[in-house]
Image 1 (spheres, one colour):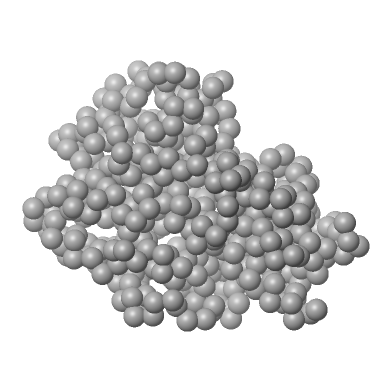
Image 2 (cartoon, helix red, strand yellow):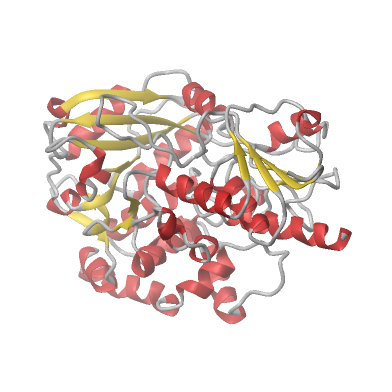
Length: 472
């Protein structure tokens, strides 16, 4: 190993690993330090309940992973990553036993919304169909990194995307389309009346039509393991079980890149109050289930879907998110659920299944949402509780203890609120740079934000290699 490394990365989540790969493949010497005993960050897989049941403690379904420009440029399939596509990306059931769906097919999606809204949905997505690669590159970029690849289309998308989901959904007349759209927007973990929530919903819909909402065979750990394997092939090294508390504990390097929360970065790198104004958002209450059989959804579409959104109307969804953001206990939570064993039998013993589910709760909330979550599941899958062999619950304190980036249980590593929605972690020409010239931030607190897509790491690495090249 050279006496001085080119770069040290702190944190082996998808963004940290991507940043390390981007530098290593350009000939820079790189070492990664991870506090836990395995790599993964928000993309890991563990037996949380019973032997043979493989759960994803954090992220599970990856529309922006399979559609990531950064991942697409790496030979991750050669390193073990295989994407599995369920028959339906998403089902959004209603109490009458029917469901709206988000399908790979625009036509199937539109028809599920009812005759009154089918045309409105087609018109909403039509300008962007067939253009995922340029749209993703532009949407998942930092505004400071040159001109977009397709300026006109990106501007058109941007004018739509900046709108709250509640505004965008006014083009729909019925509850089916409005409910589906609100559920997509809820992935931002912010009230659907918030700035740019419409863009989140539209991007997830377009991702489904272009790339699907797949799961990795074997679980989300496969993404992290593939990145780590490729990094080692490029000459990078990874040190696990190595918690970093101060910058001077790390080996000498020309650049330090942190896949951490801004709060942790400031503490470790001695940046004082640099990120005191950065705000964290509402939290999640997560349950992983080991089940004796498939979830008995009343809507047949839900039985074939990789992801199922529970909370039928736009009003109920917004109320649940508003309650979480406002600090109120969950009463009727909106649930995002995933059932990877529908498409990947390796995730559970023969005939058995796993279910991944979370609802939204206030930051730091230490209550138990198990009962309200299961009441909501029973509403759309009567008899669900009879199938539960074991459950692993994690409220905000447990989520934060498991992953230090989830401050207060905020799985997005920062609130989608006000200007912070588009200016993360603060207003700066290069959002990955810090007050220390050799220290950089690459976590989902930086653009383009949360999701297992590696793009924050990709952009941070670009900022770093520009500095390293200039110093040569």
